Amino acid sequence: MFHSGASEGINSVFKGLAYKFFKEKKKVSFFFSTVDHACVVQLKDDLELLGHHVHFFPVDKNGLFNQKSLIKSILHETSEGRESFMNYTFVNNETGVVWPLQWAEEIKKETNAFIHVDAVQAAGKIPNWDMLSDKIDAYTFSGHKFGALKGIGFSFINKEVEFSPLIVGGTQQDGQRAGTENALGVHSLKLALHDMKENFNPLELEKLKREIEESLVEFIGDKGEVVARAAPVRNLNTIFLVMYGQKAEILSAKFDLMGVDLSTGSACSSGIIKENRILMSMGYSYEYSRSSLRFSFSPFMNKAEAASYLEKIKSILKSFI
Image (cartoon, rainbow, N blue to C red):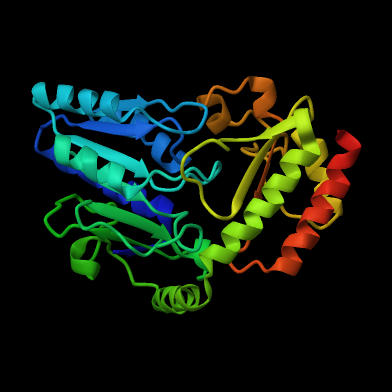
């Protein structure tokens, strides 16, 4: 199914399932993690309004969840007569922590729950990003995350899964999403995916990221830390720093003046830096969550670019450490 992007795709899947069972006068259970994207987390009120149950499972400081505990919780819902539907974040958009698809397969095997994989951050950010498991029920991607036009995305959904369409009014895409298809956007997906397949070098990107990260860890010493550095699997292009005692808005302004793009977490419409929900879910304090900097590198970054990037980062941080 093609759609405008991951937010619409994920809403289509979970609200579509919720509407279907609401019409059938059945209550089901949804399982989300505390570090899922906002388009997942903010589904809670609407799903509960339809009478369904929403459960959030926690993560530790390395962004990992307790698989046995989660399976036990899902099986409890089964024993209560409720089907379960889960969102599984393949690669976290802020921390870069990877949950291997093997873990999702194991949950599926033990519980038979419906599992949707948020795969938005996979393409060009991990090795073998295109090797998907056919044991999983659904995957969602967003085109601009790997070089396609903005406003286009797609989902793979098991043909046996039934859900009520979020957008009605036509029979396009077998009735899954009404409305005229964005043909130019879809074509841009094809071009971007071919480009990624041909030019993505995960070994080189991993090497360059490791060099930047190790240099930064040594440089900042005890003045900060890399978030989830001890996680067993992380992506190849994200370094998420917490700079103790610093204000993200001040750091961000310095980087902006040097022409370095970065993220500082959630921000309200006034531009004031707010607490970072993901970091607080991982056990960081309110203060530390407001001191975070996230660097994301191009999947095609070369050695010269990495060296320039590192030099600029150090030149800015040195006045704060």
